[in-house]
Image (cartoon, rainbow, N blue to C red):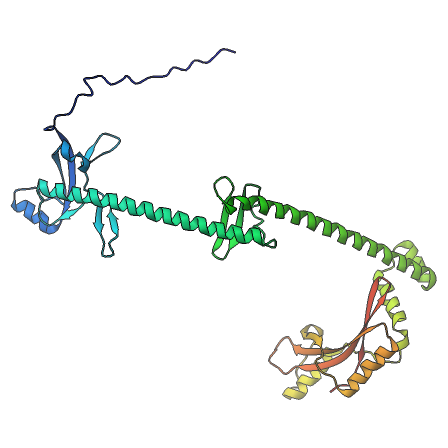
Length: 375
């Protein structure tokens, strides 16, 4: 492989002639730009000027005043009149980007004075901006350090998952939005935060995967147990017709659960069941309450809100105790059913009560609700 040779152009060293001292009487031609107000434009016309609002003239600036001159990258020298800097009432230096405006055409010395004032105020402005920027940077560093310390000291805190935390960068949600932490630019605790946030994120992923695998295993075991119980029921207590359907794989699980429910509550066959006739009961209730015989409540018009009853009459409590005595292993609760009309919820509703009995039959949970005396 041939070696690549790069040619480098070197600047010639300054000669003694180019370094000769500049005579003190030498001047530099500089452009001065300013505006005239309407009063100033009138005064300019009276003085024989052009009366234009924007004035631009060439000024000879001696070398002793070159600090009042700014030279851009194109080599154009301008008198420091723009931007303007003024001292506000609160002693802050304020910057204005437009040129100064005069009511009277200024003299060369006036322009020099304004340029000198601009030069001094510009230095103060830059000093204030630098101090303000440093203060903001310090305050932001302190704030980020405090957020990082709170995060690192609290193992329950997590970084935002979108975008995904990496070992070098993450986002933390705070009250005002979100804050990005970057290990390549942050310092102190803030630099340590991304790696810890990434570690917690990965640990959460592993823990969630383990929980899902455990839950899946439990669900599979429960499913196998349900299949075993159904197979046992089909072989011992099902009818011939049900066995044939089970053998063909077309026996509904709901039918098996209903049969198991009948077996679980066989000892309560003499106890009256809670009737699911809420639509008819609410219709009769609304007709009696409103005096309107044309009120019709269909099954789809009925809204039922069920909650555990907060109180019980002696008759209702007697039924609850009777059910508990008959099925000691069952859970018995007095339930309150609040019926209302979907078409007009402002109409008076109806409250009904029932005793809900829940039993565990192998892997199945079966329920049945029984009637209790009305209040």
